[in-house]
Image (cartoon, rainbow, N blue to C red; front, top):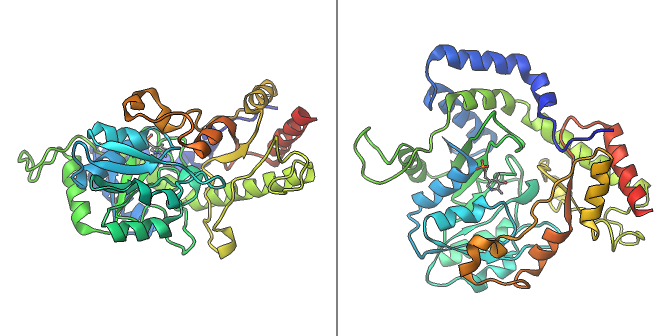
Length: 386
Ligand SMILES: *Cc1c(COP(=O)(O)O)cnc(C)c1O
């Protein structure tokens, strides 16, 4: 049986008529950049995330970059962030000639360990950039407490966590000063190309970002600051407006699929979170959905479903041979990337991130996956270990 990691064609089938109509509407309007579609999509997404402002931009990466620009980050400023994330999280810091200062993650959530942040703060520290990895909000309460005490703004990388809720019900990307979403096709709300958004409660920041988005111009052709071309296309906005209506349904399906895996793993004796499982050492450790017990609905939106495996690479090859696609997010922690060599980090500095990069494997969990497919995945994993 073939089990892809994601099936965007199946998703398109369900939304085809509406999306085709939306595309036609934009084509006929003759307005292809920003405009009414983008303004409406911004309003709808901000409302979905229960925040005052959403500013559509060209990608999740650019959402992060423009947020740091709006904070006035300068060369040699330091930004504290997670050692274990997609490259963009740290790349944007370096692009402003500022310095990423990495913090290791927590073992059970893969998110930044708040208890290791304070020791990294000094007079050059200008912001904290936590990531809500795989679809679960980072432990924000202690992060916000540190932010207040040291007067440091917080930019949340919510690229993988649109709509996910913290334990108090607050939504990813609306807890700090700014939150960044990505509409890259593989994200839970994915466009037909690149796109992103900055969320904020603050009118001043929203206004600043809108100006930076169009080369720092206000009014047009008069530049008080230097921005860039960070605009969102009307076509993407029109497509994403259709998809936004389905997002909660897709999220529920992902959560359901996670429960299916948990049940199937448990039935097959592979253990899940069961510490008494004979496989617990070599195989599996499900990511803990830590806000689930608090009655929060979107406690985890499962952009990715992660297992830990000691013989990760051979299991991955075995699954591939059986038609099952998996992925490794991420094979090398950020501080050990070649481009950050000058920062002077070495192996052993980030033990949890390094272990995660050697052990984590992503299994398919997209909304349209069938129970039969999930059973096949679990059967094959079981076969590998038998
Ligand atoms: C996808 C992603 C980004 C970047 O988003 P793009 O839209 O691809 O530029 C940033 N951070 C994280 C954690 C991501 O997963």
